[in-house]
Structures are given as structure tokens and as C-alpha cells.
Image 1 (cartoon, rainbow, N blue to C red):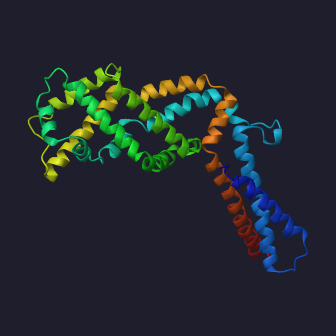
Image 2: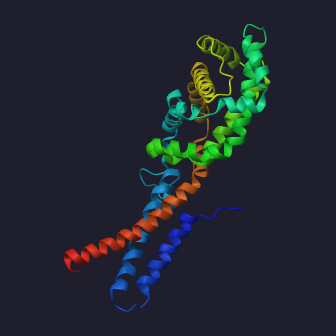
Length: 306
């Protein structure tokens, strides 16, 4: 189903409203003045936002104006800046609050018998323990992320936009959903491949984390034991994340891909990813412009007596 270009609809509506307000013979008075002021401001706001948004991706109306077609002309700068920017939200400090809220104990209980888990963790010296533990953990994480993927997209998108400044313009729900899908694909490959290059790094991190756990057995059903285990499991996940240097790897990989992507193709992909947000910006421009037009006309009336 084709999405309605609400930005263009708002521009056409503002133009039609401006024609109706200014060309028809309306009776003089405050309502007519307010109507004309609203559509004067609305058309100006809609045109300004159309120009600003269009200038990011191409030349408005094909005119060779300066500071237009920005994404194509500044493609190399974007190819370096975007991965670095997105990598900041994959750092351990950014992920820690989310990871620490997860109930790892409940996830384990839903997949395994606690007695079997106790036996597994009681023998970390077993030859296959490390690989078994990683395979089990990746299976749990993979299934949980698949199940929670729809509910993660919106809050993750909001978090990125809130902290991104102007660069958040390039991040939409589609972009975040694609990132989660990429993570799921890599996690599935990790789960299936016992020779995956990340496994040795994770095994070392697990060994270091387990050595600090001491003699406490966090498999009891008391709230205190569950909280202790969840805290320890969250710390291990975050240590895994640091040891594998995922943010740096993703940033380097994304930089390479963007550098070797055609500038026009990159511009169109970004426009497609954030298209609905850009349409909303243009609609807001028309509405805010109209309101500003009314307020300015009233200020001129009160201050200048016009």
C-alpha cells in the first residue's frame, strides 16, 4: 500500500487555502483577516520546509542553488559521521540501563530445567561446557530478541533521536528495525557455528566473569537470589559486549559500506528510511506557519494599530 505524501498534501492545501482566502470576495472584518493571515503564514511555512527538506536530497525544482543536494555533495563526511554517531549508542554505558532491566533468570527457567542448569554450571572444567553455555545463551537471547523485536523498535528509535541532535533526522523506525534484524542474523550465525570468530573472545570473558562469582549459587527461587543472578548475568553480557568490540567493528564495517555506496543511492536510501518523518516535518511547517501568521497579524494590529 502506497503511503500518502502528507507533506505535499499540506503544501497543496496551504496553496489552495491561500487562493481562496485572497482571491474570493470575503466580507471585511476580523475573521477574514485571521483567515488570510493563517494561510499567508501556512503557505510560507509549507514552502520553506519543502525547500529545506528537498535541499537535503536534491536540487529543489532542479535549480543549481548553493547549499542544496547536501547528502550527495557531503557523502564522504556522512559516511564517516553516521557510523561514529550510531556507534555511540552501542557503547556499554548506553546499553547498560536496558540490559540491567532484563530478567535473565526467568528466561533461563522458561528454557531449561533448573537442576540441569545447576549441574551444567557446577562443572565449568568440562571440555564442552564453554561451548554449551555459549550456545544455550545465544539461543535464549536470539529467541527473546525475536519475540521482543516489535516492542524494541519504537523505544530504541526514540532514544536515538532524543540524543542525536540534528543527525537524528536520518534515523527512523525502519533504520532501527534493520539494525535489529542485522543483529539477529549475526546472533543466529553465532548460535549455529561452533567456529564463529567471536566464540573464543566470549569464552575468555565468561571465564573472567565466572571467576568473580565465587561460591554463590544464584539458582534459588528467592527474590534476592534472582536479583543477584540477574545482576551478575547483566554484567557478563556487558563484558561480552566490551570484549567483542562490537561497536568498533560495526562502525568500521558501516563506514566501509557507506564509502563504497553510490552517493545518489545513499541519499535515496536515507530519504526512504526517514520519509514519513520528513513528511511530518513539512505538515508541521504548514501548521506552525499558519499559527505564526495569525499571531504576527494580531501583534501588528495591537502594536502598530494596523
